[in-house]
Length: 541
Image 1 (cartoon, rainbow, N blue to C red):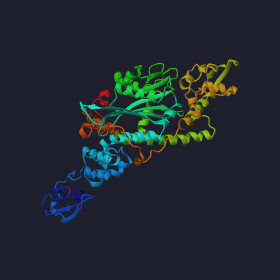
Image 2: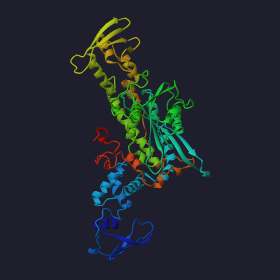
Image 3: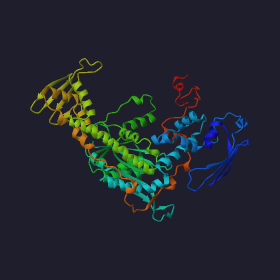
Image 4: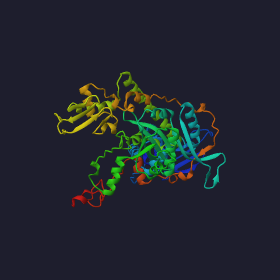
């Protein structure tokens, strides 16, 4: 309260005495203002004022107009923004600076605002160090309340040659929820994997595996916290998936071109070499890498279509795992136990929402999920303009000629052969996307044939409903958790991020997903870009 009072009046005090029993303050300009407080007992929350001399003289107001105030420290800021961080742990540091500026009429540095957010996170979500000790207890309660859930640990016994009695140092943890294991059995044979940095007190990486459901939406599969992205961590993560999540053969794993992932996928011991699995790269990352090396400005307009026997189901990017990273927005700033707990609650909510949607469609007797229905409607609309000619009705062989009709800008005149026995069309789309193309639907419409056999079972409403039928169960109150008999888990001090200092400018921008106002370009002296990206380089001005 004294700090806030001084900030509001733009006055300053100095501390004469400050300990557990006594607090003595006086005016920094010796105007006579002073305050003395004491604590009645050790358990008291604050000091009781016993002596007060004031108010400050008018002459002790600072003569220099400052944009900062010495008493506007991280403690004051953390108290002020606590309610905001409770609602959104992803609260941007720049937003905190803006809040403080509007409320107190003083500016605070990025460093001070960052420290304030760290204090609130520790207060609301738990201490960073103790969070490691509580995590094994939470994981045991999670497994007991949600059957089928698997947790795999990797600890260090020795750190820098020191042995910790009845303690182990955290290195990695993998977890997959029981309902996700069951639900994946009804998803596409696709796993998208991606990694994202943690931005708390301790460094690390969150690895995420996701699949795709019958509605062409992300399906959360498995998670891991590791020291970073490397061959060892990716091999361990993928190995855990193969052992504890799925033994399905023919999986298509989509990822970026990280060297650790490539090495892990090529290691027979991990379990993802062909034909058990097929590795495909994210097309968006390929385009980005190609643009970097070729340096063509029009590279963003190039789209790729890969014909790989339909293993991708038409999925060309890792957007699904990245989209779920957005579902976990804010988790990367939290202590480790709160991060894991957040994945549980977010995935449960995701299942609940999708379960209600899929069951509603099932009760209405709808054959296909919403996204698939939308695709079918577009293909049916195109099929109306096709001309069908039968070549063998017994063998179900037809030729389909595309017509433009009144569709402006569309080309016609292409001919495709449709073979119902082989489930094949020469456009190759049924093989790639596992659903009927417009040429197949044109035949179905003319001869009253069902298109259902052309639709992969994982794209039908039954699969959509079964994916989200598995049930999550509440985790009991911590007082009801069973005793944990394992070693105490402690963090690896070598993973402390810069000993608590704020991140570099590059990491700040990654954390807040926004860049600071750009300085003036040295070439054209305009804001918003630099010499390398300056339009004047290409125009010659």
